[in-house]
Length: 289
Length: 289
DNA sequence: CTGAAAGCGCTAACAG
DNA sequence: CTGTTAGCGCTTTCAG
Image (cartoon, rainbow over all chains, first blue to last red; front, side):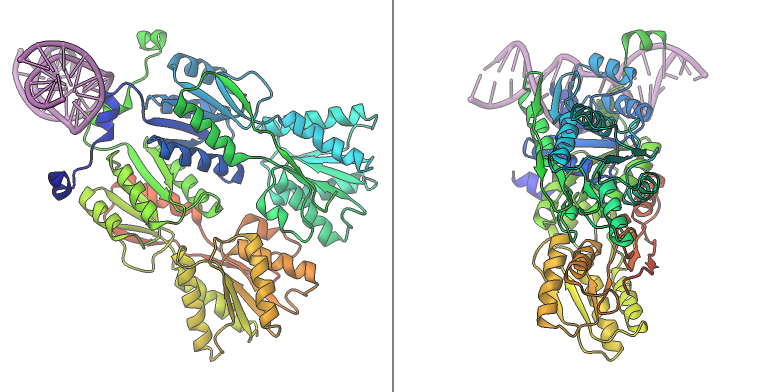
């Protein structure tokens, strides 16, 4: 140990990884890092892996399944102990490779569907239902929807499906929808609500695909002098910190993103059997519904 | 290649890394992932490394130098081609290890100081000066400051130093300051401004340590009925997307975070000589100053 | 229980 | 230019 100290010796983990059977690497491919949601999950994963002496390697797919496939292929060359992905929908090639690789697979943030191995998240469909029900119970009847591209973000699509179901079950007309073929952002939420209100001025509530979009809608209302929730109620999804501090806190659904990352990482560390963990979510009653 | 196809052979990059001289890994230690700033840098780095067939490995230091040191030590065991860190201030042990490791070192988001090797960012001190000057030129004279912990976030501290310098040079009294010993957040900005206004109701402008804090202050004004910028001007730092879409766009300084990540990664890929790259910043004239 | 040696799956150098 | 082989620095097994 004296020699270690004087020479500044650091064990070579590459050599260690090659020699040993179990891999010290865990690969994570997220759709985006601009969205704080994935950054939160990543943090939870990194934190837990660190305690377990594993190392996180990561890449960003930009919401493109083909890119996710290429990145997973590249990741598998590192012989990771596990590959973590967002959601349950992946290219056929991605699934095939992962099955062949024989490493653990963790699919995060969604449990509506059939997981490959481990799934840690919550039901987006149920979240959409809960949101719709909350608005209906509060007495809103002419409820619209403003959302971003659900082709890319299938989790948002599942929330929308749940939302539509519940409106139908409540005997309400299908919502007027403004679905924008773009990534979610505050700016798009603003534009989307303005467009929807221009078409359907009689709406009394709008459900947004997430908090970014909802905040854009809320800011539009503030500027256009639309009383919230008197004239128009607004509901988002995610429970972003900033949405708790707007003049009126946003009514939304808070998701345990950090916890999802931590649990997924722990299951991998423990080499737990295949399972689906429902981390649930929490309705946050703000002041906008 | 037919056999490769049928057997699903994937080259083992761990073995490849061990056998070859140059390392395919680049290590990145960021202070936080909750802050979108670091996520943006990380994205730029990951994107560029991917094109160069390198793999990013990362860890989160939670703004603790001792933790950064431990993480760098762990990272060096992977024999990375480069280690990327935020800022120029690091524990003595961190610097020593990095020097001994002989890998490239990239210090990001700050160029006010002496870099170890590569530095890619902008001058926070100058940004603070530019912000103060902008407010002074707009006619504000009783300018306050609301900030978060500058012990942890030395870049915010440098902006504050530049801000103070310029106020002094303009012959103005030192600003009333509310510096909170916490991470930046929208909520803390809100609390901070309320506290500062209670102590110094005659302020006509407030500079915030970043956009998160500034948005909190702005929301406080909206709720408390303080006219912005008539009664109180507000300026932030970072150029967050959301701050462009508030009822009044926030006056702030936009930083090229993505570009910083990309340039740093490219310099590493090119094995460029030690240098400091000033990516600059851009004053965004919103409607709050 | 300690110490020696055989790989892990590649890369790179070298001989043919 | 192609084909062979000696390591890269560990872990793990096996003999002493």
